[in-house]
Length: 295
Image (cartoon, rainbow, N blue to C red; front, side, top):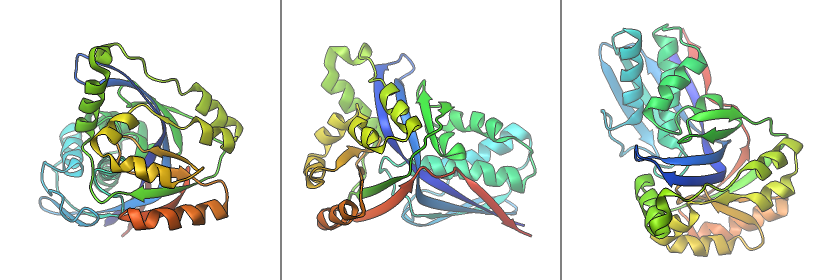
C-alpha cells in the first residue's frame, strides 16, 4: 500500500511574541493561516525506516536531523510498532523560510504513518504528538486559520470568512528561527523577559467578519524588526510592495503581500521578481493535511 499526504505551508497573519520563558521558549499569540503551497509525503512499507527528499529540500538530512524522520520514530515508539516505512518527501515549501515547511513534513509524516501502520490515532491525538516535536507542527494537520497560544502549540480554530490572495517573496537564503528569536531578545534588552505579545484580537475579528481590508491593515509581526536586523535587504523588499500590505512571515525571511485586486497582484509579482529567488501567488486559507492512498 502507498499512502500519500499533501500538507500545506503557513503564514502568520499575526505573530505576537511575549517574554522569554524559563524553558527557553517565548509566549506567543499568533494567527496561523494555511496557504496553497504544499509538500507531498509518500509512505510505503519497508523493512527499515528510510527517508529521501527531493525538490526544495534535496540537501536536507535524511536521518534524525530531519523532523519528519523524528516524527515517524516518535509515532512508532508511542504506539509500539516497528518503524518500518520508506518515506519520500517532495518539497515545494522553501527551507528555513518562515513557512513551517519542516513542521508540515513532520505533520504529514505522522498522518501517513498512522494510516500505513493502522495505529488508529485521531487527528487530535496526532496533534498531541506533533506538539512535542515543535511549536508549529500541529497546525498543518488542521489547516484553515487558527489562533496559536502558549509557544504556538495550543490551537483554537478561527472561522475565517475570507478568501485571500497572497504574493510570496522567497529569499535566496534562509534564516534560522532560533537566531531570529535571539536577535529579538537582544533588541529588547532588559525587557526580553517582560515584554508583552501584541494582541491578535483585532485581526481575528476582521477574519471572522470577512473584512479583507481590515485584515490587510492589521497584519502584525513582533519578530519583523529582528528579521530585518539580521537581513537588512528585507526592508527593501517590503518597500517594493508600494502601497500593498506586506509582512515578514514568522521568523522570515519570506515576505508576503496581501493583494486586493488582480492588478495589484500582477504589479507585485513584476516588482518583486527581480529581487527575489522566487515569487509565488497562493490562496488562503486552505485545508490541512490531505490523505490519499493506492492499494
